[in-house]
Length: 261
Ligand SMILES: NC(=O)c1ccc[n+]([C@@H]2O[C@H](COP(=O)([O-])OP(=O)(O)OC[C@H]3O[C@@H](n4cnc5c(N)ncnc54)[C@H](O)[C@@H]3O)[C@@H](O)[C@H]2O)c1
Image (cartoon, rainbow, N blue to C red):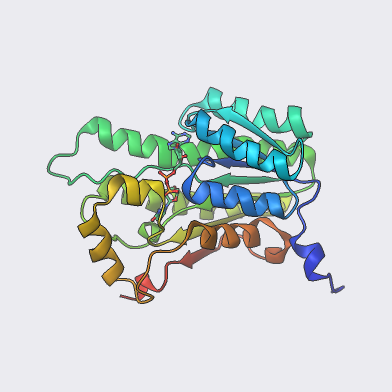
């Protein structure tokens, strides 16, 4: 096989990436790394202000390199419109990052049917909708593509009481992705996942986890710290780029050793 330089392998110039939930946390870190590698970015999120701020940051680095679309990933029409923005603004779609997700901590004893359904709708149905539409577009374009999904260590093993709906969704996502990887391989569309453990984001540190929970979780991590969102951004860049050209159906665990416990 011909040797390609590292610079060429990691280069995403001329490519377009859609990142769901890209306004903050892990998604924003992924946006920044894919953009740094040269990709044009479409951010799809529920938080317009935060999307605008991040898009402004990207435009300052490279004018005209980002677009935003207010969307709920659990809605078909929102997903279709989001993917259309990529085509209309940048002429196509090469990379989809399914990152949007929610993880309300609710024990089974008090979990309502509505709470369970919302987690499944966003985390599992949202990945189905995004992946289906992106695959259709990528097949039409005929130049392959990379679909990267932010799963979780909870796709493989439960991490805490209160995450039963989340674990159902994330186990489901990983099962779904493995099968889709099988189906899309012949079109050179690679489908891979990232399994973060604990990552310090607005969702964990200013949202679902209090100080005591953070301390308890940290004690279970062999590396004794939460991950930085950028440490997921770097894995996403690997999976989105040709650095990982022979990976499909793979799940990269990035958890500071948490699953070793
Ligand atoms: N932070 C962690 O420790 C951790 C660990 C494992 C997996 N994950 C996964 O990583 C992903 C991102 O997590 P995070 O911690 O960065 O979350 P976060 O709450 O900090 O950010 C999530 C982003 O997704 C957006 N979003 C939420 N629901 C949406 C919807 N229905 N449609 C569109 N956008 C929506 C939010 O507005 C926000 O910008 C999730 O899929 C989560 O399950 C996170």
